[in-house]
Length: 388
Image (tube, rainbow, N blue to C red; front, side, top):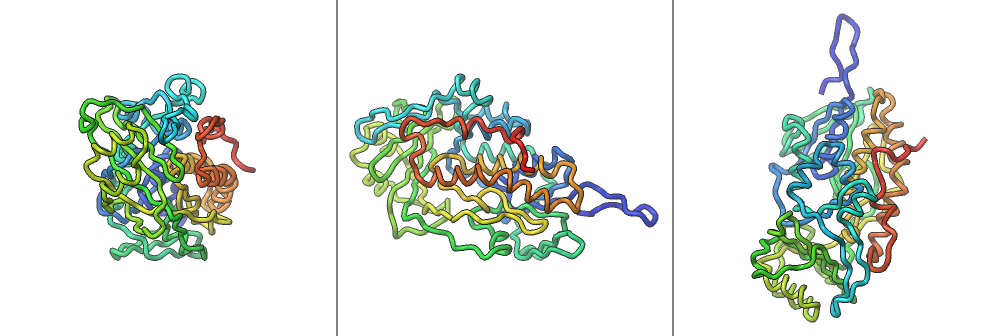
């Protein structure tokens, strides 16, 4: 990552070089957005390969507006499910508590579709927007130093080193960069766990379920939806109390029998989905307090690294994707000595919104009753005014 080329005794400034730590949704969206404004990016990811985890993801209208500008809309529409609504129903009676209508009417209102996808398909789409030569797999960050000339030096566990003008840490709820920069409180276990999986809809034996439903129980819930346009694959995710379980891995296996027992008495549609489920993953739901600030010099945090979300609004990835778009606007045209100011502007533009989403999600009442969702889905990261 050279900072420029030497011509005679003068240095011709080249484009800004930015190292992005983490190749998740936020890291890849940020890389694609920064490349649009002429910034050199290299994404460093500790995993040695991308894995297609058995998980669904809701792509809100607000996230789709970012993904459209990154050239991914057609691909995502072609491989995702286009739901009529997000229906919220009573766990036992099936009574509709609130039916959040999506489909064409929401697309017209909010300016983009609401899609239900396999998480791996969204990740693959974002990866397609970043050239392979910009991504370094098998690079786990172990050291970070801000040098007196304003650049940042990175050290990795495999012995590699790199220098960049700035660093964007999109390395998730367990961000190593956050822990290097700030004295942060440890992650908090919420005392709740989640089961989740995707499986072929043929296992339902011809039964058809609602497009997308959250079944609200007294102390637990389950969300079920299709992730393919032909309804060939479905996904569910739960939340329920289990204070002693603290395994954080998304790949840890759960006991399907225990899962079924914990949702006994729920509506027959829930029973059908769980009865057909071949296996399931289980993980502990974690939370963190919001950070007082996100940046230190030419290093900033982004996405779950600075504002981790509980899963109850389906907005965690969307917030990181929005972050990438807003950050690219703040850095567009910035000089090297203006990066720290651009990072502060990014935080000032985003903090009120991400804090509101964090707090709303944490309450786990989103769409349980009549809800005005305009402030979430109507947001456009490409046009929202930037902070002064």
